[in-house]
Image 1 (tube, rainbow, N blue to C red):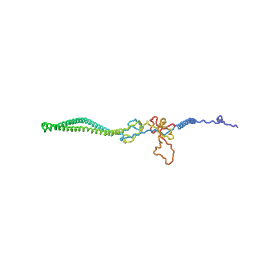
Image 2 (image 1 turned 120 degrees about the vertical axis):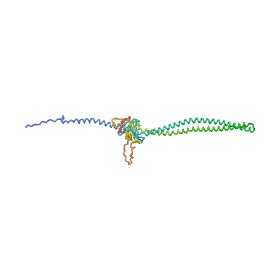
Image 3 (image 1 turned 30 degrees about the horizontal axis):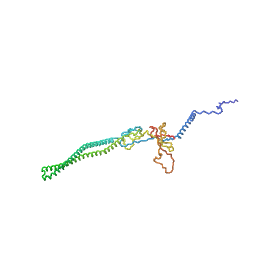
Image 4 (image 1 turned 30 degrees about the vertical axis):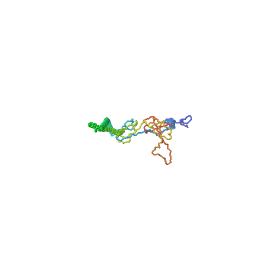
Length: 381
C-alpha cells in the first residue's frame, strides 16, 4: 500500500536555527528616539537650575512699589471740574480738578478795595502833613522874628524909660528952688510918663508875639497828630494784607494741580460733589521713582549689600529682564511691625525664619513696572 506523505513548508530560521524577532512599529521607534533626545536636555536644564540655586539667591515674592500720593482738599466747596481719569499720564502743574471759587474771588476783591482805601487815606494824610508843615513853618519863623523884634523894642523902651525917669528925678529938686522953669519940669515929667507907657506897650507886644508864636507852634504840633494817624494805619494795612494773602491762598487751593510729572492711579470725586477739608480727591505716583521691595529671609540677607547688582524679572513681562541695585536693607524684621505681636508666653517655641525688607532701586526707570506688580529678584551669592 502506497503511503502518501503531505509536503510541508519549512520554517524560516536564522543561521543559528532560532526564529527571527519581529521589527517594532514606527511610533515606538520615534518615542524611543524622543526619549533618547530629551534626556540630555533634561539633564542640562537640571544642571542649569542647580547651578542657579547654588550661585544665586532668588526671591519670588518681591513687588514693584512707589510712593502713592493722596491729593486732598484744603478747602470746602463744590467740585466744578475734573480733568483726569485713572491711568492718565499728567504733566506737572496741570489742573486736575477745580472747586467753586466765587466767594473766595469776591473776598479777594473786597480786601483789595479796602487796602486801596487805606493807601488813599495814607496819601491824604501825607499831603496834609506836607501842607501844614510848610504853612506852620513859615508862620513860626515869622512869629519868632516878630517876637525877637518886639523884645528888642522893649529893651530900647526900658532904656528910654530909665533915662527919662532919671532925668525927671534930677530936675524935681530944682523945681522947688526955682532953678528951672515949671515948663521944663512938666516937659521932663511928661517924658518920663511917656517912657513908662512905651515900656508897657512893648511888653504887651512881646506877650502878643509870644502868644502868636505859641499858636504857630501849636499848629505844628498838629503834624504829630497826623503822623500818629498815619502810623496807626500801618497795622490796619498789614492786617488787611494778611487777610488778602490768606484769601489768595484759599483761592489758589481751589485749583488742584499736579505736583510732579506722574500717573493718576485713582479718582474719588466727580463734578458736582461737595468736598470737605482733608477729603481725598485723587491718588497718583511718579513712574520714574518706582522701586522694588522684597522680603528676604534672614538666612539669605548676608548675600545682599547696598550697591549690589540685582536682576529683576516681572511676571507681566517674563521675557524682559530689568536691572537694579540694592538701595537699603531694613533695620528690623517685618514681624516686629505686626499689629498683633506674638510674645509666646506659653514657653512653647517654634523657630520661624524671619524676613527683612530690602529696597532695590531700578538702574533705569521703566514705566511698564506699575506699583503692586509681582517680580522676582536674583542676586549672586
